[in-house]
Image (cartoon, rainbow, N blue to C red; front, top):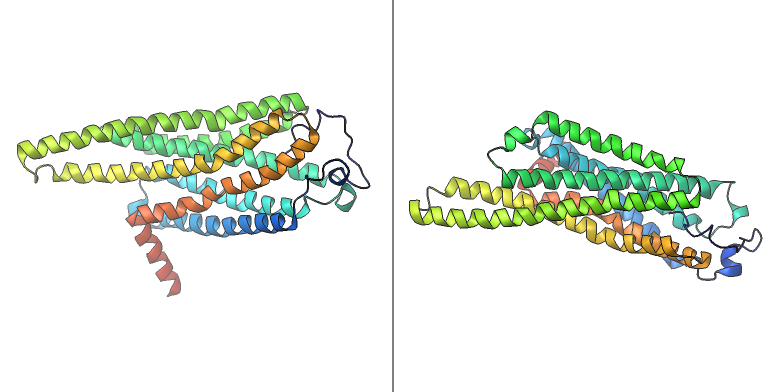
Length: 326
């Protein structure tokens, strides 16, 4: 993350003793913090890359998992995999070079690293939150309009939605390069927060609220059917409702974990935007390294949530691993 307040102060960085040492003694990472951040991102990389590769292979190789609703889950898993392949390595490198002075690294190294990090941050965040939205909306339609689901959620519409998510995520993040001055970039980050976090959060919250209401109504209807017609007549409906309820609850767990892990980063980000002192901005960026690294954990958790909650995933992955051993 770049330093948003670096242009709001007249304190010049030192090229000899370094800005951290001269003006901001708390602006450096301790050795233990460096090691902890590197280990955290390395562990996240291993778990996220391994888990999401298995999930994507399971969807690709298992016929029963190649359902229309799995398009959005595959999109989310791909976004998580991209986080592992890009953001985790970058945030493993940043703590390593954070305390170096300007004369100890190649010219413009930090500038280039910041540009790459900003672009990938926006792109992966957009792809993740929009994919979460798509998964939640899919579950909302399945629960609220089960009879019209095949008509509303078609193969073509799902493909168009997934393509839109990824094309938009790259195009939107690319616009960051057109904001050259500090004030315009500050506006971009505010728009980014609303578009990629605020709106998806409201949509997901609304869908989950409506699904909870529908689920309660369905349970009440099943009980009434059992009383009138007997338990055997309501068994197919009960089974379908239980399946939808489990899939819906899994989507709720995944989205809740994402926003819980991402919330600390949003708080630090807001503090960075309003920080007027450059020393304070440096200190907040140290906190940001932790908040961002923690937020990446969602990409490691998600594939294992699918396996724990979904029997089809467990069976498919177990079958793949057994075939590999042979």
